[in-house]
Length: 169
Ligand code: ADP
Image (cartoon, rainbow, N blue to C red):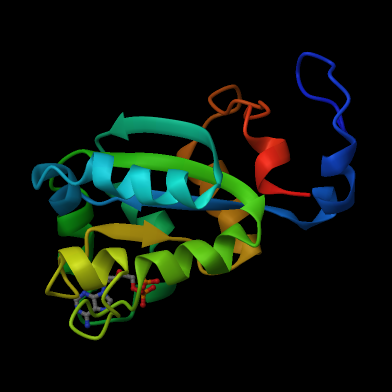
């Protein structure tokens, strides 16, 4: 893999950052899909300069929702959270880049949309914690865990965006 694209083109400018490349699992939740915000949310991550490596519309089943949110099992809102996430299709995505996990969390904004800064997805597009339109992994470890949970092998694409040399020196 190293510093070659899938077409074998040598890209020396990418070598230094390879170890820093992270993966994050981003999901447009059912309210985001129903409200027609899929394009808007993808666009914000795309324009920032991160690389999309996985994308699908998916009806999440209960077992998967429970596994994804297993750390919140003891919370009072857990049953309604599972109902919410399984209430309609979600858009599952994997984004890659240097610092993508923390940066995507910043672009998404605070869990409670009323406390999320203007300019963030939740700050601009949502009003309630229980309808906060988007999920983003909270650590590089969870980025990997959630990617493996929501995507099968072969569903992700390894590619080199044409803009790569214009994003990273
Ligand atoms: P985040 O999604 O910002 O990482 P958490 O991991 O704390 O936030 O919570 C996961 C999701 O659970 C939230 O995005 C939200 O959909 C839901 N949630 C969290 N807290 C509440 C709450 N107090 N009431 C209803 N839903 C909640």
